[in-house]
Image (cartoon, rainbow, N blue to C red; front, side):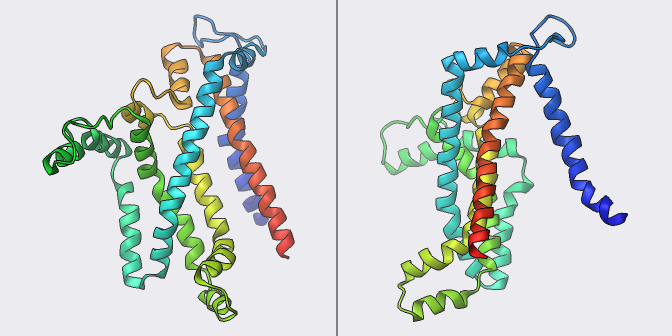
Length: 280
C-alpha cells in the first residue's frame, strides 16, 4: 500500500500543478473576451488560435523568442562546459569553493542582479566609463536596449543552470577511460570527442533544457535590458493579460508556447531512450 502511495505521489503532483492549471488555461483560450468578471465568456471556439496563426506579429515573436533562447543556450553551453570540466577536475577543497561561487548569485534577488547590469551597461555606466577612461572609445557605446544586452542578461542569469548538470555528469566520469583511449593511440581531442562528450551527454541535454525552457518565456530581462523594441513572447503574454485584458488570447499564446516547449522535450526523451537501447 505504501509503495503504491509513493508511486502515485508524482502523478498526483503533476495532476494538481500541471494538468489542472493547463486545463483551466486551455478552457479560457477557447472563450471570447468580454467586459466583466471574469473577462471571458463561457462559449467555446477556436477563434483565438485562428487569430494567433493569422497575425504575423505573433509568428515573428515566437520565432524571435526561440532564436534568442537557442543562442543563449548555445552560449551557456560554450561557456559552461569548460567551467564545469575545470571544476570537476579541481581538487576537492578548491571544487567546493568554485561550486559555492557558482551558486552564490542565487542568494541575491534575480531582479537586483538584472538591475545591476543596467547600471553596468548604460551610457554612463561602469563599462562605458572604463572604456572612456582607457581611451578605447571617444563616446559611450549604446549597450543598453539592444539584443546584446538581452543575451548578456540571459547568459549571466542562466549559466549556473548549465554548469551544475554538466558538473554532475563530468564529476562521475571515470578518468581511466580517457587514459585508456590515449593509450590506444587517440589524441586528446579524439579522446574528448569519443569518450568525454558521450559520457557528458546527459548533462548537456539537462543543462540545455534548464536554460532553454525558462529563457524562451523570459519577461524581466528583455523588458529591462532590451527595452520596448525587444518584443519577445513573455512580453506579449504579459501585455495581453494585464494591458489589453484579453485573457482568452493570452491563454492561447500560453498554450501554443507550452506546446512549443513540450515537443522538443518529448523528442529528446525518445532520443535518450533509443540511445540507451542501442547502448544496451
